[in-house]
Image (cartoon, rainbow, N blue to C red; front, side):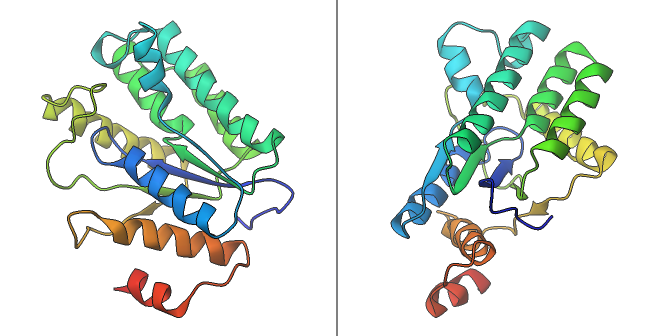
Length: 207
């Protein structure tokens, strides 16, 4: 979808837990800020919910997961209201739905609502991180259950297909720090917004 410059350029990083989304969000935001862009970034809402004693993971409930979902939507909308140029989202509304449905079953009302929300306030680009390497411990999600991690990944892929959601899967990383992912996203964002991309940066992202 062509970017409408009257609203922020909205990026979402999606995947199952433990794949490095939060770290990548802040790396991308930092690089864009260095280039003079006004950027809003927010980390996964489940983290702050967990700190408030709200149940997540396998013990989550419908009210808990809806709270997380609505807080996520609030942060996305705040980015538009505050006139940021770029909003970098750790997850999307669709990630939240798969965690909810794993625990609470399919929810047709929320499915229809999220479809309409995403059409009204679209993501300009959704990047999906692949499952590579060891599950990263973040103190929030269950880092011991690979079944949980894989099931969320599979459910997310199924939902993306069912809803026909445009997204890009990031290529397997070639370095341990996965900096090529940040370079790729930063360069594509600059190009989409009409900012110059240094030649050496283009070469690095293409490697």
